[in-house]
Image (cartoon, rainbow, N blue to C red):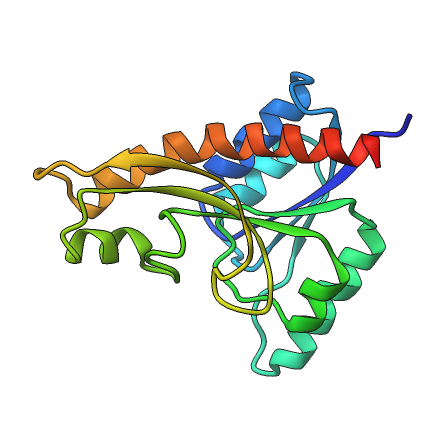
Length: 190
């Protein structure tokens, strides 16, 4: 039985990507990470991929959005993933891309509340008492795909955006691995 092929999309530090890499290395996830695509040249996640022996592909945003979309799609086609995991990838993928590949995203809020790039800030500004993390299928909208799993994180009066986001990331790293375990088990059965 061949292992499921994962491709990670990430833009920043890569702590969520690292949780996936570690889960694969320790055989918690029966998969192989066949590539990491990043859009930011100096992102720490690139070093994380290199350290793990994972091929990394730097695809910075271009002024011609269609050219960038094509580059992402072509790279994904070459990598032939069973599942693509958006783990802190701060770009919207084209409708063509999300229709061609099975893509899940980790989002730092309890969707449908607080979609978009500023979910943690938005939850604090709204005076929410709790927020959390959602793992969802990626569709052509912004954080509108079907939710697969969620976990709540309470908000305390002393939380800043940075402190709250760090607490959410702790939940996010656990939930992405647990969700991938379920999705990959379903992949093996199908």
